[in-house]
Length: 164
Length: 330
Image (tube, rainbow over all chains, first blue to last red; front, side, top):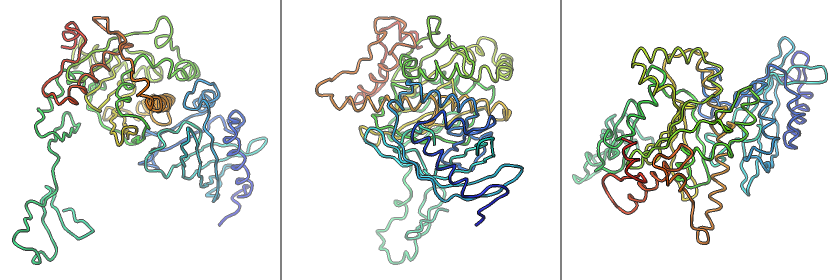
């Protein structure tokens, strides 16, 4: 397995993904948002067509930068009842692989298991990320974050009200 | 031909049992004709939507839809073309009784407090004026009991993300509707938003062009399936604007639905105290001849039909509060 692709190494990407997962678990959402490039896309495909394109398929989430920024503001606003008080989450990020590097960006995949606890229910959101990362002035940044859930339905989860 | 992998019995596409391996081992009492796949008692379609009933005695589908049929047509005619279910379905759940989602799906009163983050944060974040949703100039429409449990709330169409991002295309569609069906009917189709409820578990909401249905698995748990129904053959550009509009609010990861899930699950936890607190008030607008879309006539309509069926009554149910409402619905 390739441990480097272009100017990127598995080690630095793994470290970055573990760091951003901690920001999300700690609800440091504004710091997390600062890791996004202006042209970022945050995508969660529908569970029945996980390989689909958001331009011709109804996704669960297909945020551009402005929508994602609004998502963060809403989650911090106190009027997003589904996350007030916020869920507890715990993310395990593993199996990081570099897929390809081209023109200063790298495509990397990783597995995730996000445990979510709310009202004495525990749900696990399992799946894989396909990320497109670029190097910014002070570290890696997301150009695309595609979170592909392996769940067949959101049952009994019911909702995806936090950031995956 | 469908062949079950377990014992290799094969059924043809009409459901007839067509193949049984080594069937000489059976006695003459083995009646293949009685062992075909069991059809549902009633299956009818209306404009491509399939309806199943387990009541073999139920009336025809068109009769069943009654006054709701015209509204269903309005829901399907909005694009000036036949609609289709688009790829990407939403399959989620709520730890709540299914009847709470009937109420919630046509509840104008909850929209502002429950979905405050959508109206006061998201719409502002995308630079939209939400004053015809919230505040003193908000638009209020009507609620109607359509008979036998069906109901609708109807408002003059309000600003949504798509009315800004695809204004030109929507104006063109409206102009084509005027050509095709005349100004008056086009006005009725295009200038209103509606939440239509077909008893007992079908919802269509025009602001997002969604079809939603749900099934109780337990008194405090339901499964929900939802889709977008959009005009065939529209441009990829318009489709994308419609997707953005839809998922900005609807679905398990939208800026609306998760708060409904949370609210209904909270209600369900509260109803655990039903012995001590045995009411849930839906009397809003009961003193008005013409209740508004913020009132609750449409919920009473559902409950009246549900109550009649639970008592074993057959035939139509008058679900209105008073005679004036019956006239309004017809």
